[in-house]
Length: 42
Image (cartoon, rainbow, N blue to C red; front, side):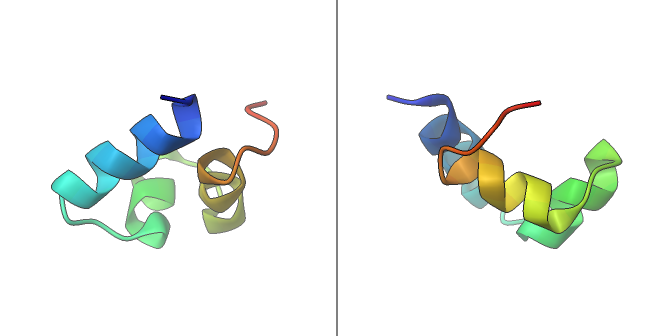
């Protein structure tokens, strides 16, 4: 399992949107989307 799949799995288990996860982490929603889709993790 890739890191993006793990992020998506746990985010969905907690029933939160990418926008909510981004807000909680202090990043942008596109950053979360990028992580989940295998983009840069920086």
